[in-house]
Length: 401
Image: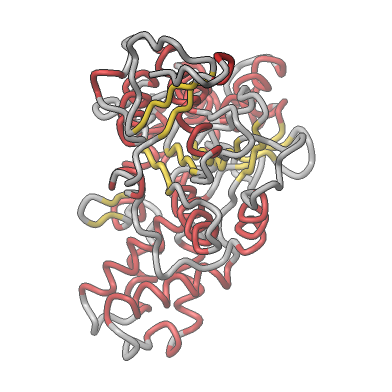
């Protein structure tokens, strides 16, 4: 109620402890005050791994980008960490979030959502994702609009209000499949950074910076194996220290891929007496390697399948045929001959496969390579789906070229 002795231009209404969507009257200034207590969902990101290793350069870069005031002018509003399946994208952003939170930069908490972009059964669309995020921010369900655009506007407004009140929030959008799934979840506010992970290079997001994550360096791969074993079995498990050469061989046979290394560490932890040389022998059979790299709900082949099944037919066919090339990499022209395509057609398909991180562009433009484990997977698919005659014709076209 207005005090009759006050100037009418100073009449104010305050909305406290929630968002009220009915009409507000007799107020020149409306202040949105969010709940004092942060809902537990807002701080519910998965725990970062205690055995994380390597990645210091990109880790420090991303942490520095989250520093308050760092991006007040023209810096990116979002950072997209992309890479092949199992390379450790989610783990990296969790480590970044932990370091930044330890600095006290995000008193409002971390807002985390896994979009399951590559899993058809659990895929979460942007409208449903926004509904979950808005509720995690303390907005009752009855005030969440049905329309996607209205949800996005409310989401951005609430995040900005948190920031204005000194309760800056970090947003993590995990496992986005494409730009359209991630775009509505960006904050649009330089004070509210967003970390996105994807198997695709999401270059269509406005004001976002791309970070392509490679496999681990050989020394870091061995160290991850050592740390995971000691985490599981205690410091008395000295198998990696006692057998450095087999440990390096295991890392190489795993293609220095974190997912594969963690699976091998779990398999070794199951049998404390198993020597590393036994695992080297088991993984040495290329026909069985992907089958060996499986334990419980973790499997390298399954991780690859989720990406492969989202390829169009032409992309999948070229991917399957690439292992027929005997060399470590292949030119665009040779890939075209392999699949009986023009160079322009091959370049378009290879570019799409590179954006999906199923092939790697060589440092020299116009050449491409497959990660060792992806090569085994593609070869399996080729044997399964391409007849012997077609494989022979593809090889003949390549050799003639």
